[in-house]
Structures are given as C-alpha cells and as structure tokens.
Amino acid sequence: DYTKKMLDFKIDLTEASSSLINYFWSDTLSSGNATGAMKIDGTFDQTSLNADLIISNFIYNDISLSNFELYAQLNDLRNNRNGVIKTKFSDGEWNDFFVQSGNGQFLLNNNEIGITSFEVRNNSDFMQLNGSYIPDSLLIIDKFQLAYQNHFLINPSQLILNLSNEKLSISPFELHVDDGVIQGYFETDPFVGQIKFSNVTSDLLSLLKLKGSERIDGSFFGEINFPKDKALNRIKFDFSIKEGYLVDQQFNNLRVDAFYQNGVILIDTLALE
Image (cartoon, rainbow, N blue to C red; front, side, top):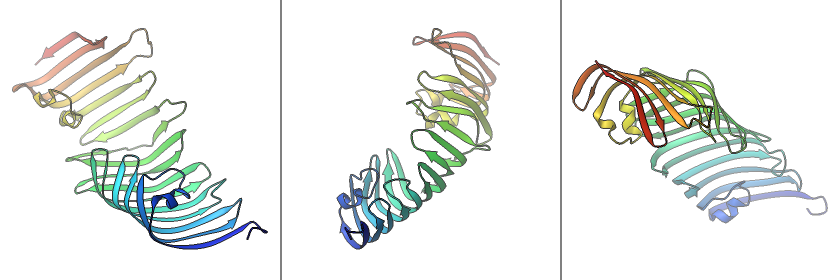
C-alpha cells in the first residue's frame, strides 16, 4: 500500500537463489538455495521480517555447509534491528575444520548481539559458547568450552575481547586446559602482554604444528613476556618442563631462561636435571 507506505508480503520459496536472500541479509551469501516461508510487514521505515528457511549449499565467507536452517523474527530492519535468530546446520567446513552439526540462538538488540547459545560438533570434538557481541567493538564470552583431539579447554571466568580501532586486546584471563592453567593478557599492534602457564602438557604443541615439537614431552610451567617498550623488540621466555623427555633423554626438570630478538634466541640459562 504505497499511499499508507505499508508492507504485507507472504512469500513461499522453493530453491530460491542467494540473490533474494541477500536482499534481507546484512551481508552477502556467496551461494545458497532457500526453501520455506517469509513474511514481511510493517511500514516502509519500520519493516519486520519472519522467516523459516532451509538453505542448501550455503556458502558465506570461509564457511560452507550442505544444510543451514534459519528461523528469524526481526523488527525494524532498517534502523534499530531487534529480535531473535535460531539456526541449525550440518555437513560443512570452516577453513580447515570439518563441521558435522551445530546450532545457535541469538538475540538482536540494536547494535548488540546476545549469543544465547552456539555449538559446533565434529564427532567427539566440539565447541560451545555464550556471551554477547557489539560489532567492531566488544566481545564478551561468559562460557567457552572446547574439546579437540582428546584435549579439553574451559574458561572459569568471563573473557573480554576489545576489538576497537583495528586493535585486539584481551583483559586478564584464565583458561583451564586439561589439568593445566593458562593465564595472561595481551593486545595487538604492537603485540604486548604476558602469558603464564602451569602444568600445561607439551602435547598441545603438536596442535600448533610447531616444528620439532614431537621431540619434547612433559609439563610446562613458567611465563612468556612481550615487553611494552618497542625499543627492546624482544620476547622473554622463563619456563621449565617437568617430568619429561627431550629427544628420548628423560629428565626431571628442564629450565630455560632466554630472549628472542631480531630472529635470534639468546639463552641465559639452560639447565637439565
């Protein structure tokens, strides 16, 4: 109704292309065919959307999924977008990680996105989190759990990531990894911070694909410091590995106190007991 500037559309979709989906999407899908129903109503200035869709061959940035289910109730799409979004997805890939199944529920309130729940699974590996996100500003993670290749990580306290001015900073955090603990803080551009670890297994090094990590076995204790003074341009390592092996040589304690600067490692202390 152009005279009253009102909308009231009910649309049934069968294998609709991604170009139609993108008209109502804040970003752009590279691919996808949607089947389901959409209802669009309200004024030209304050439009609401109800959608219940199944999207096959879903591709968005580095995410590809064979099946993506979307349920959305959104109000005031043009201005103060608010409402709820629920998703289910299966059989896909994100970068080099395979996705067997997953689901999420999100609450939109103006520029803030409440992550009520989000879960991704691949056989026995999984990731779960909830929190809130303000785009290009702040990510608060209330609960985070990760199981990957027989290792388990959880946050006992809130994680706060500031994402402003193309710079990432993480407030003091604590993570429990298997039987160990990682604590610290850091910020980027330039990278500054400190990471402490206690009873952290060397098995994690292989997950980071560090060359030569297969020759080290044991539990790490100590810290890594990234200085605030740019002029120093060095990283300080102060750690020990307990009850382990180095190139098949068993030891009770390996102590390392060293600096990394300009591509060179300077060792102050190297003691093997």
